[in-house]
Structure formats: structure tokens, C-alpha cells
Amino acid sequence: VSATGRTAADVLLDGESIAAVLAPGSTLLGHDLAASVDTVIDATGKYVIPGGIDAHTHMQLPFGGTSASDTFETGTRAAAWGGTTTIVDFAVQRTGERVQDGLAHWHELAAGNCAIDYGFHQIVGGVDADSLAALPGLIDEGISSFKMFMAYPGVFYADDAQILRAMQVAADTGLLTMMHAENGPVIDVLAEQLIEKGKTSPYFHGVARAWQMEEEATHRAIMLSHLTGAPLYVVHVSAKQAVEQLAWARDNGQNVFGETCPQYLYLSLEDQLGASSEEWGDFEGAKWVCSTPLRSKHEGHQHHMWQALRTNDIQMVSTDHCPFCMKDQKTLGQGDFRAIPNGIGSVEHRMDLMYQGVVTGQITLERWVELTSTTPARMFGMYGKKGVIAPGADADIVVYDPAGHTSIGLGTRPDGSPTGRSHHMNMDHSAWEGYEIDGHVDTVISRGKVVVDDGAYVGAPGDGRFVKRGLSQYLI
Ligand code: DUC
Ligand code: ZN
Ligand code: ZN
Image 1: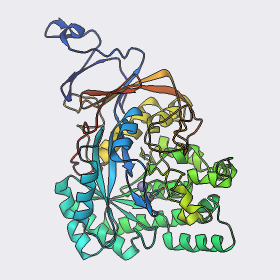
Image 2 (image 1 turned 180 degrees about the vertical axis):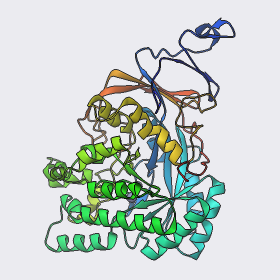
Image 3 (image 1 turned 30 degrees about the vertical axis):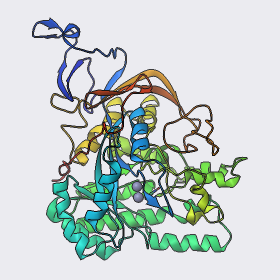
Image 4 (image 1 turned 135 degrees about the vertical axis):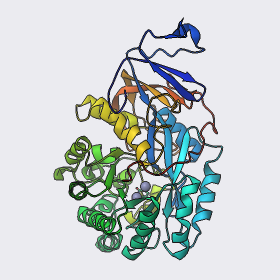
């Protein structure tokens, strides 16, 4: 299955690459294909797709006084289990730090530890003369995109003047600007006012992060993109009004793009409000604290988001994988939702969760591949090697069994004991607890090496290499 169609075929791999895609029954130099090769994987009745590309992950991200709980080793292994063969993580320049130093640190964290291939975007956490001067040099490093935050004043935040200057550099160089579009200063006041009224539980995180401030920031980013001519990629879109802004800008001829995440397609603010457990009481809702937040199911965001995936108003689905355990991490925010580290872990489940959209008739099989692999490859300058099953491409391939079944697990309890079903992310809970998936990742091949074989992980840390990316293929 590719983004453009489906066909019955044999795929011939040679070393790390795809050598040929052949009609069934083809011979190789006159010999029967199966007799001419070392290994045959029988994918009869199953889908053979290009490996998933998750272009938005945060392994080991320092955030809210702690760090995301998946290392590059545990997080990429979980990704492999779920049929993802490439991640693009975010190297972080923190305020006061040099961009080059932030990037070098991220290389140290990842090198030799990854189960699958990985690239980096650059987070620019402090836009100043030095960081602006460092941006063009990222291209030679294979980093063709950078992210700014209109949220989180005092942490990663960039104001409009900083965004303008960075976008001017992007327009000149071909770097792709990625934006966290939420009006942070307003959200922080709303959050403070809620806390003053005693509204401290996790649910109020979503109340403070009002959709109006996602719509507004998205619009502002779009207009700055228009003014500067820098293409814009808005990450983790959750509000339908933000989608409408993107659709409006695209109808206006602007080169702007949107990404959403599985949590905005399936989970809602009410799930969080209703959440309660013996273990955590109403702090249970902290499991679903992420930014942008889950939206109310009564406002039609989910329906609109699925529609946008069909109409191409939203082009990609990534996870924003940013896992934190409840124990010692999310619990930092007991009594004050502002101190709950933001993030949901989904890197293992994206391919399965999006396949459910095929099962329920929301998207086609081809669109599934396009949203999860082919467009990410093109958007972030990897297409040809990644995102496609074609001669010369890296042999990153997933055999997906539509007749299989996957129960999404609970992970481990705080005392370390398993909860029965399990996932492989380094988390003591799952935002996806109890999800039953029609479909199953059977075999995962990463650059020619089988790393997941019938549900068993058979790879090793260091199998994954850094991917030097080219410029986005969506530049005009
Ligand atoms: N959103 C999250 O949920 N986590 C990390 C950063 C972000 O923007
Ligand atoms: Zn973000
Ligand atoms: Zn993110």
C-alpha cells in the first residue's frame, strides 16, 4: 500500500535498501524469486506499508522540573513495536544556551541508543542575534526545520517580534518554521485566576487553555507567515477553529500546514473530567494533561479533525510523544494543575490508532499511509529514502495484519508490577488504557534488518542512525 494506491506485489530487499517491487510470480534473472533470496517473509493477506514516520517526539525532554520518561532507547524501541521506523525528535536550545550546544547535547543523548532511524528539528528557546545567526547553519547539519513556542512564557516562549525575525531567516534559507500556536501570556493569566478560585485539578488545565487562544495564535502565526513569506507548519492542532484558520489560509494560497495527534481524534476533555481512580482520585485526569489540551466533545472538534484529514486541511498525524509517569512526575502538579508536566505518550500506538480510522471508514488505506509516512517524509526532507516502497528507498517496511488484534496496555504499576496487558513505553500508565485495536503490527524492518518479528523485538540499541534531512519538499 502506498499513498497513491494498492497492488499485489513482491518486494525485494537487498541489504539496507529496496531493490525492486515486482509483480507476483516475477522471476529474477530467470529464477523463481523465492528460490533466489536468503529470506522470505510471507505477507499474504496482509498490508505491506512504508515504515511509519513520527515527526514529533520528545524523548528525554526537560520539562516542568523533570524529564520525559522515555529515553531514546526505550522510546524508539516502543516506536518500532508500533510500526514506526523513523522519528523526528526536537533538539532543545534553552534560553541562555547556544543553539549549537543544545543540538550537540541532543546528538549525545541519541547516538548509539536508538532502535530506529531518527532526525531532529531544532527548538529555538531563545530568539536573539546569536540564535538567529546560527539558524542557517542547521541546514548543513541535516536539520531543516525549527520550532518556536507562542506559549510557555519564561520557558521556551517567543514573542511576535522574535517570531518575525526568525521567520525572515526561514524565508531566506528554506528552513521550515514549526509553531506551537497557543497564546501563552493569556493562558497563564486564566490559569492563575482558576488556581486563585481553588480550581486546581487536572481538568482545569484544559479550561485555561481555551480554544480561542489556539485560534488566535494560529491566525497570528499565519499572518506572520504571510508577511514574511516563510512557510508555516502548525504542530498539534486540536481546536476546530484552528483548523478553520489553516483551511482559510490555504484557500488564500498560503503555504501553511497542520499536524494533529491521535489524542485529538479520540480523547476529550470530558474523559479527563470524568476520570477518577482509587489510586489517584480525581488527579487521575493528569494522565491526559497535554498542550494543546484535549477539547470538549460537545464542540465538534474530533469530527472536524477527521474531516480535515480527509480534505487535506490537516496533512499529517504525529504523536507529540511526551511521556511522564504519574509517580514522581505528573504528581508534581497535585494541588496545582500548572505544575503537571504536559504530555501524553503515544509513539507506540499511532499506526494502530490511525488504522482504526480505516476500519471505521473515516480515511482510506492510502490516506493512512500518506498521513503517517509519506507526507512526513516529504514535509521534512526525507522522501525517496523514507516514506515510500520503491527501488533505492531504505528498506523500512511494516507488515500489518488487518485480521490481527492489539490490546493497548496499561504498563506497570508504581511499584513496578505489570498490570496485565502491557505496552513498551517507559510509563506507569497509558492514556490509551483499554483501547482495543482491529489490526496488528506483525513484522517491522528497519533499513533491511528485521527489528520486530511477530510481536517480538529482535533489534538492538544503535540499529537506528541519524538521518540528515534535506529541505522540505513542500517549499514552492
Ligand atoms: N506539549 C506537550 O504536551 N508536551 C510538551 C510540550 C508541548 O508543547
Ligand atoms: Zn508544542
Ligand atoms: Zn511537542
